[in-house]
Length: 236
Ligand SMILES: NC(=O)c1ccc[n+]([C@@H]2O[C@H](COP(=O)([O-])OP(=O)(O)OC[C@H]3O[C@@H](n4cnc5c(N)ncnc54)[C@H](OP(=O)(O)O)[C@@H]3O)[C@@H](O)[C@H]2O)c1
Image 1 (cartoon, protein in one colour):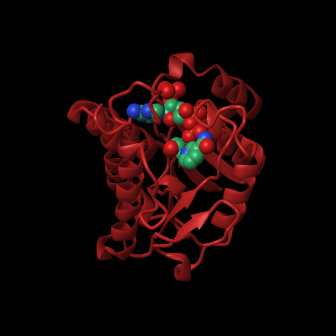
Image 2 (cartoon, rainbow, N blue to C red):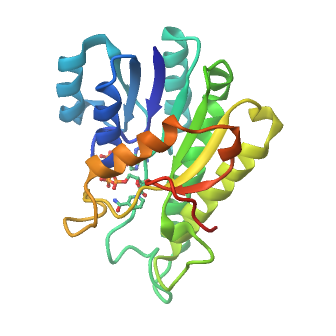
């Protein structure tokens, strides 16, 4: 039985990853979200898959909630095999994190904290369970907008947050304290979710299927790399 934890599992890509991993009989999923009381689609999956899904409260900005979730997972299993840091925000237009001349430190900080710091602190909290894992992997759901070589204008905070997430992945991959755990960072494509909008290029089904295929094939040689959902390697 593969033990998997996904953040931001209540909608969008996180929900689709949860759904697809559930279709594999040999998985147990810890599906985490900010508001389990309003996670109707996860409740529906739980009704279908019973005790192979545990819905846990986890706000990536709340260290107490992160530790409570890790204790809750540790009370049920002694190892985690796959952690997917999927939770993220891309604030709407008008948020003072997008455009030069209209930036506020608080709004920029909120995006960077959620998208980059949150994933790092979550990974830290689960590192012992991951160290016990079978073929353990950490997957950051980052973005092509985090590529420094490919940067264009605008979306300052989001780009900064995903570049920082990529750096966190790279350092985690190199850090001897994370020995034995493969860490990668990924761009899931432009995906038809609340964040990506209806005009996006691919469906959550396509993105999640590609990511699952990529994750299934990971070896030590992939540690610390940046991949598109289809398995091709991306420039930093
Ligand atoms: N869609 C795209 O085109 C695209 C492209 C590149 C990268 N990405 C990345 O893919 C990931 C998933 O995006 P998506 O398209 O599925 O977006 P989405 O539909 O907006 O879903 C975002 C998810 O993140 C959760 N979340 C936000 N802040 C959180 C927090 N503080 N703690 C825990 N969960 C939190 C949301 O929970 P609530 O329901 O509670 O808000 C929701 O479950 C994100 O990291 C995003 O940056 C998406």
